[in-house]
Length: 487
Image 1 (cartoon, rainbow, N blue to C red):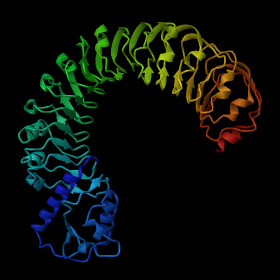
Image 2 (cartoon, rainbow, N blue to C red):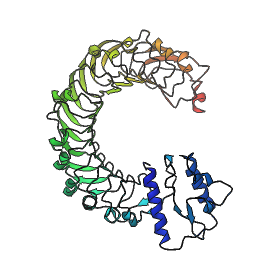
Image 3 (cartoon, helix red, strand yellow):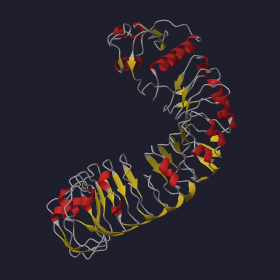
Image 4 (tube, rainbow, N blue to C red):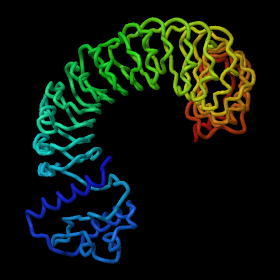
């Protein structure tokens, strides 16, 4: 939960005032569970300079502590820790439940209101709660049930929060279109509305926010075509429109010196050919276009592209030294993968080139300088793997299915961190060597090979939960399977 101490104390003081209007606040015997919560709260803070918190001790009644006022029943109603030089964070064990009291709107000086990730809170009337918070700049209601239909939520915000800069209402049960009245919030810089039930078009006026740096509208039901102006917003750094399956769009042109660092439109109806001007995105660290309709050759400044219809040779990614993930699965790329100098990508963690049309002899030694490489998928191409010794010490997942292998690669003995191995659909013949069982593999796929025999191992990985041997020519009894099935 992102909540500042100041906001938390103000909210607590409001709760105290709210209850004080109903009954006289007098000292009583503190309720034990509230005493434990207060002590936990104290321990989460740096309170070495606080005089009041120095009186909070396990052996005394919490209603007698400085800064605490209770009902006669012993229920804490007021918390006053002003001028105590406290620092630290509030954990999410605050126990707030029920509806957010509309009286919170009387906190007219409030700058930040963060009630996010408290799933038991409900918003009885968004307009009533925020109606007087004219100075509010940051609003976080992630996970709060606002029950706002149609354009009510946008009208409620624009009529009361003229200075709003950060709007975060992820999973807040919003529905309907984004109301055009939202254009009045000229100071908005961050809009996070993921995982709601918003629908209709994405309106062009969102590009008019001169300070907009983050726009997240993923996992909604938007439709229509995304205005090109939004993609060209000069200060926009992150854009996530993914998982809106009816949302259409294309990339026409990216201006020089664009600020985009993260561009995510996967699982949408975006398509067309990527322009060469995508190379203008010098700050780009993440791009996801999975499950879209893009076609044609790939420009070079890309990171994560899957399930499209890209064709042509693999571009050089040598200018992207900070690249950590390159996934180009299920396309029509061809030529040699050695067109990229892999040693120039020292931060690469995941490399997926499977199910393309790459060809040629691929020496795995090309990857041995990638000390951070954990996931490598070269499966189902037209390549042959030169399995001479290579050092890939941190690889945990390796897929060499359909790579024209005729024997077990000896370098597998050196992969001590390997837990997933797929050597299926090759021409590996003979027997399964016993050393392969000495690893800590969790998943081993040796199907569709020419194996005829396996040595009875003295040890089988206790972690193995997938073993696929179908489509071979194995004969006789596999006597060790009870070791696998009993783990």
